[in-house]
Length: 268
Image (cartoon, rainbow, N blue to C red; front, top):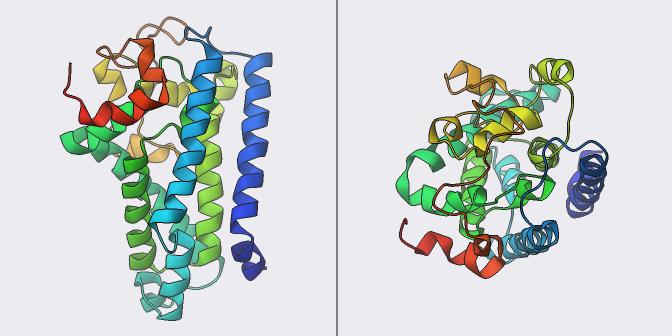
């Protein structure tokens, strides 16, 4: 079973990506949370081209991905989990929790460290937030993120199957919590005890800096509460809040050439 998952990693990830993208896009049409302010066709075209470009770039830059790093670690018995003799499903659960904590920490420091923020701010220049925003990251940020993930996988000794499962969950949750869907207050209140919901993460894309520097979680909502970065609701409400960055309101930042050039431009 493990080898079946590992050998078909690309097919599994593509299938889940396509299915979740289609489902979220349908729900955004049926039960939208906010009225969109920017041309959807322009945003979707550029965001999706960037997504596929990033996927191709990772394959070209890294001889092996995080799954390959996990296989190498297992072959050499590297990593803390291997050294401690942790095995079975408990290894996967511990690994996925620690990997998710890594993503939270990475996201936090990409907001706090100026050099990394120059890359990450491209994600925040989207003038609306929907399912495609969940994969709208600068290629250099994607490369750094993969390098961090591979280092953590080797340091922990994460099993390869757990890496595949985590990647699928991470991609799926990113599309889910960026989606423009209405869930209802009661449903959202319950769901955000277990996962990061669209309402919880949308606040992170507020133009207000104090709100933007909160709710850094992607999969699990517990890290924000644990480390004091949790904020419940935007001050202007979800329908009234402004998405994006105050200095990047020009629609040109929705187009791929400008998106790629953004880290190399001075702050306005």
